[in-house]
Length: 216
Image (cartoon, rainbow, N blue to C red; front, side, top):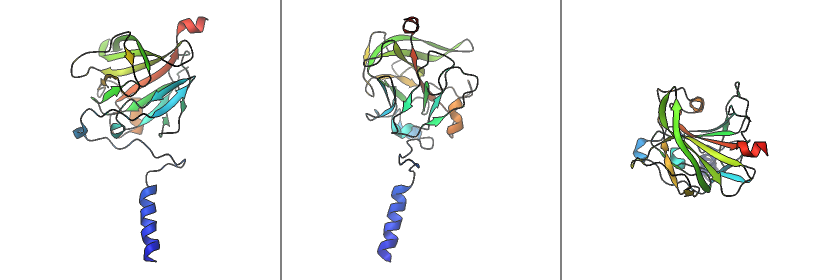
């Protein structure tokens, strides 16, 4: 009976935190700031579509929640979960794009964001909110993908050196730093906060089809 009781306790500990589909949730309560800006993430594909594999862009120890969301852009391309992590789903609201074209990866402000895909930086620009610059955004042309697709990465803030990536720079998933998670606390109400215990700061990934590809 003692052996049975010990086994029951061990199995209970191993099973805690697992989801019904057997995939343990990656998200955790708000990570301690003592973790710094975060380590490089493991090579982990969390979503994919049309040949594009989206990797986890931040240290998993700092993830607060991950959620798909629609984007208000008909050129959005629906992503599918790889099943490697728990991904929530935000409501459609009045947005016209696919429900899973956007992917929010939550992490505390200041967390280092790494490239989610292999490819080349196609554009870098200021990110505007109510006429104010709030960090920057960029697009990446994936190295292996259907023609005309780009991954848009927003909610980025400058790194300690103040430099932003340059157009034409090759990037490698999980290796090349793109910036940090910008702090939108008190700036806007963030949709991801419904799944977290903080303000919902995150990096936003959106897979879109370029206008040139749509015309063709």
